[in-house]
Image (cartoon, rainbow, N blue to C red; front, side, top):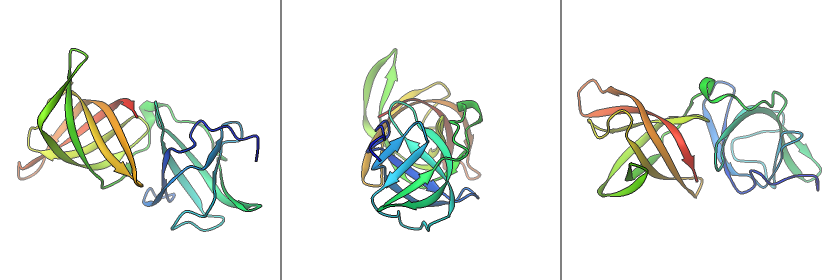
Length: 185
């Protein structure tokens, strides 16, 4: 598959079944942007040949989303992107994920301001345009910009995002925050 271009090579991909439940995550060995195919050396855990799946690629500078079918071609595993269109951010599908993360820096007037005591959060879902997470009650406000650090599939990611909405928990011990991505590294 020498025609592959490596736009997403080395990036983490979250793999979901067609009902939106996470099956696994993996690091992309190679990607072909023309045929919309992702190549893996080995079959990612939880997948079988001919499975239909959805993929959320946590790529720099912006994530993308595809649907496809798992195939074996020669000695490689290929997930073909038959529906293959990157979704527009305003209609991005949300995928459940429960990953811890730390908010380490606030961005004020385009300048980073490290936080003395980073805020521990738990991701609820993620999409190509943003993330929802749970944090201690009233940790952030709408329009706050921040840097968040997380590890997915042994890969560190730094996300810069802006709070767009919040919803207080039933017992007022936590708040769920909806945020749009500004930068994903």
